[in-house]
Image (tube, helix red, strand yellow):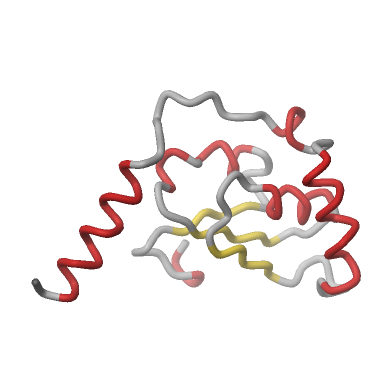
Length: 110
């Protein structure tokens, strides 16, 4: 099998694993979750002091790190993951501050 075809199949299967009918948490439901609050506290000393510095979360899953960065006031948060079509709710938390990336997107043309 061609390596590009193999990678495309991996992405297709990973995307299929994410259920479209699953309920997605709103920002109000997410912002005060223990995982988010703990991450904000734990990572704050290691993140850039400049709140306009871009932050990239590879494999953002449910978005707890993205939410922690929002909580800390970061303005340019990027998330990349499989099944991104079923994770658009994370971008809805702050459309002006969160950009979600697919395997075909780069930071320059998101």
